[in-house]
Length: 337
Ligand code: GDP
Image 1 (cartoon, protein in one colour):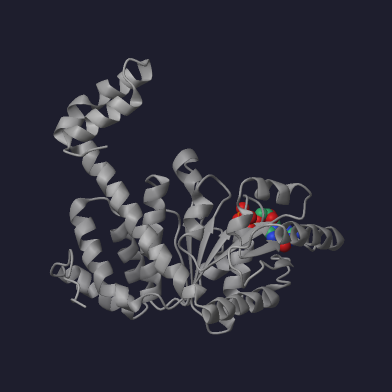
Image 2: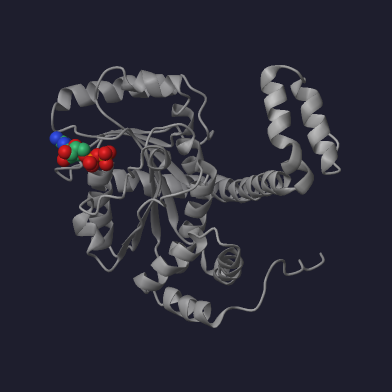
């Protein structure tokens, strides 16, 4: 096989060489700075970020990537903090990232509040990154993927990507993690909603939190969920998503949760699905970037910029068919439909 030519790699900025050194030495400040660089949209920053990621990529990939989703108030931050502390006690290094579409819409972010995960954020072995404050969902998720790789290069072996149950964010998080965990409240109706939204198909594990409030209700909800899940087509032929109950506040059930995650990793590791998921995710990420790059290039094209507003208005007014409009626009950049 021909060796791949080095693509898009240029000499490293001396500032970034220091950053790489610090990051590989597990320096939290260096990691935070590197993430800020990859989140920047400035073209010179993008260039530096690409070089940085190219250098650090061989150091990434050695973590368990866990996606955690649930509606606001379900107890995500309480749970992540408890789990994070539990894992640190067992010698792990934990990073927490977030994909939060609501932060771009409402200006509030799931990790923006500094008082959240106070204990965890004080630990050297933990790294918590608030949600990026700007960008489309695609953009935010894209930077979260890059941040995830940087955290791995900095030696974090458990990465938690948190999201709220809104829009496309769950799909985005499931598309960048190894194990997707759905956090639920033991209230009737919640599970049905998740099934309706098609989220259940993404779940590798379902957890009912706040089981301390009414343990019987929690067990009942879990049993109902188990029977609902058994009727769905599982994402993996070797893994029927388990359903657990726990109390994040009382730190009850964390041990069992971690045991299930380890079993998940071992089972899907042995069947080859774990590696296959990552390969598939890497390729999907590439295509997503190609798509968004093409779209951006299209919008920037001088001929398109000249006519786009008028053409869009004509389509809205019904004076030109969408098909004809798309064909004309694509012809402007020398593309066939
Ligand atoms: P998030 O919005 O999903 O991050 O939820 P939070 O972690 O902020 O929790 C929302 C509220 O639920 C807080 O008042 C927590 O103290 C409470 N909470 C979280 N986990 C539990 C639990 O296991 N049991 C009880 N009783 N309350 C909980």
